[in-house]
Length: 123
Image 1 (cartoon, rainbow, N blue to C red):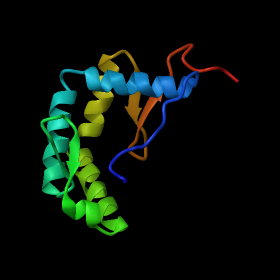
Image 2 (cartoon, rainbow, N blue to C red):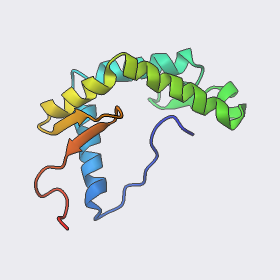
Image 3 (cartoon, rainbow, N blue to C red):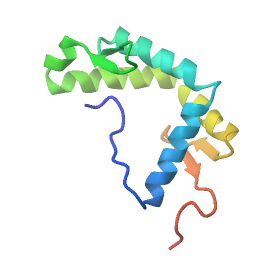
C-alpha cells in the first residue's frame, strides 16, 4: 500500500535475519521508539490514512480504502517527508548506534548499516 516496506521473512536468509535484528533494535530503543510510534500515529491521523485501534493495529480510513491508488502513495510520501524533516532518520541511526551497530545516513538519505562480522556470508 505504500505506507512502509513490505517484506517476507524466510528461514536461513542471513540478510533477512539481519534486517529483523536491526528492526528489533530500533523498536527496542526506549529513547527512539515510543516517540516515533506516537508521531507516526499523529501523522497517519493528520493525513487521514489510519488510526491505531485499542487492539494495537492500524485501522485504515474509509477514504483510504476507497481512494484511487495514487492517493495513498502521495499521503504516505508526505508522512515520510514530515518524519525526515523532523529528524527521525537521524534518530533511528542514533538508536542503531546505541544498540552497537555502525550506522549512518547515506547521501540519498537512507539508513545504512555496516553488517556486523559474521552476520552475512562473504563471497
